[in-house]
Image 1 (cartoon, rainbow, N blue to C red):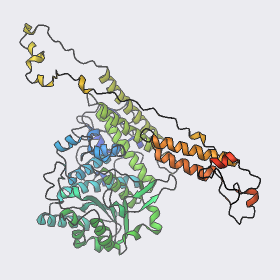
Image 2: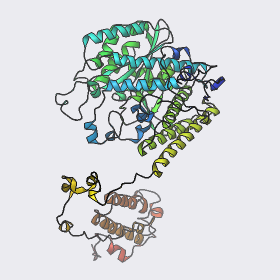
Image 3: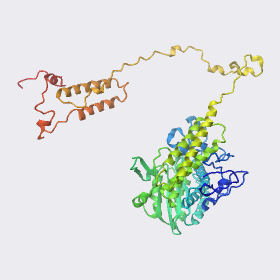
Image 4: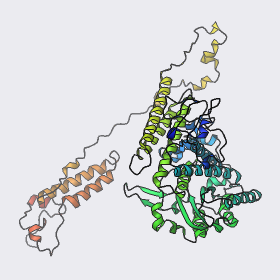
Length: 597
């Protein structure tokens, strides 16, 4: 969609949402021909952030950051989305930043509940900023419903006493939650936080790497309730961390990649079970009251095998076998932890859209448009930063590349993405790359300020500050002692003898060639063993050499009762002769055999 000057008119698929138009402070409200859905507009009265259009020549100059006080790429969820598969677990802290161990110990971290709330708010803001053009009524209605549901999930995270064990707060929360669940109408979706809290050890508080809450030792989950009618619900559990081994897995038929389903939907649930306070008390108390018995093995077994089967009177595995197994949302397994819970929220978004009737292609299209909207917000913030360091520049470039990669997968006949939308994504990616390059070129070409050091210390009262002698602690950096004796003797480089593995032929035709192959193999194994410190994988090379010689080069003898043994057996053929030198050279052969045994 395109964004025109204030006071102009948009039409058709080029119209932005009403909230985007209201975000321009001091400008004339833009007339819209297509507004956002009713579900999206409900509950979103706050001012919307500025949206950057794909037509950069028509985009107005942004006035403030798209998501608040910091640029978009500084958000922990942004880094988790785009850097997740590129960073190891040890190089990341709870906020998603790449820090050293010393920085991790010195920097204050956020509890798991706060990180989940921030991710819900992050995804909700991006969803509200998405352009309404290009979606049909079903997709737009589903996006609006899930936006409202994720915002409600963030509110529930703040109200729920996660890991605290407060009886009064938990009772009030259950009363509030049951009022929300029982007031759901047909077609409504509600996202509820949950999981389990593991009691901390007594020595954990004194450790620099101690967790801030019992939920950091446990796991955060999201539950999705979808009301089909007055009598029936569907329920889904979303998990991107511990306990995910309870979810189904498969081998991708096309690529052979191991895939997992991070969300499982439970169907045919009577309404009286999900509106029962006892069920929610048993399910959510594991996240409220820490318990040392809620381990990574015991807690998932309790949730998946004891509590959830109560809903539809089926074992958990029966929910993804049979016909329903084809409707599962298979995703590549990510081996890095979901620190910011952004993957958890995005998976809940996809699962909720599936439960609302969207096809996998429509859900993928909506996710691609979300990433495109996030990239446009990043482009918006690039106009408001005076400089950009190399790490942030690489992160923004990586986000643009991944957005383009996801959009390229939508260029198929089954996709609901239009060709013009793909071109708009390409324009945004190109403009983002160009803006990052321009900012970095300006930083690289600017020379540092000139440092004027007076030659005469008495020329000014501040001139003495430039002299090292005025710093009393500078002498600690000096080492005037002799260091030549520390260099030691140079290590004599070893003389490596060549190992000619090509001496072993691919096949042998007589006994003499077989004996030479055996002799060469023995010599090569000796060279590899003596130079094991200098030749990598020496043992593997020797084992492979012997295996190749025994199974591929030397013929295998035929059985003694084989009918064609005399004609075709290499070792028993009557026409093959063995020389005396070959017989003597054979290891273990007697050089002076007794002619009359």
